[in-house]
Length: 178
Image 1 (cartoon, rainbow, N blue to C red):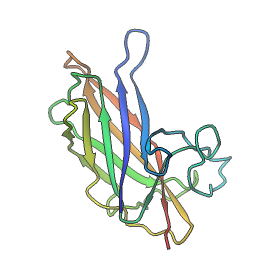
Image 2: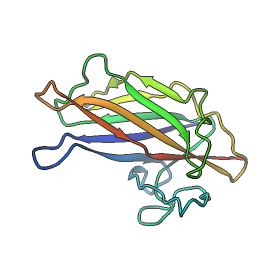
Image 3: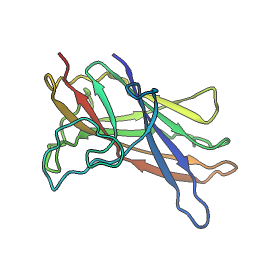
């Protein structure tokens, strides 16, 4: 069992650029271990994908791979001085993404939808959230189930009280073990 971490870094934009998110995930398998940039996989015209990340620059994409029992953490990172408006929650939906026609009612967790409250970390720029349930799906040895992690939240830029809305939908594989 391990922590799988997705990190979303906020750029609040300016007069000439819109707000955006940069999505990364922590990869313990990399040499050396570290943050990897998320790359959206290609559905290949509706053909079900085989599973497992292939690295940046190829059609398989680059994304986290979890196992049964893993915990999913979500980091929101902003510039120094960003704030979390009162009564704001991170909205998280976790649903299948094995093909464009996949049934969206199945999830690797006991719940599809999570409204989460986070904890600001000691660096004062990272707020961390934990999905309260561990991954509970076992796709079978050498098989993968692919899930989409849809997040939505609002945050305020430094020295502002006007919320900016952010959303992203990276994917994650759950890999079958022994």
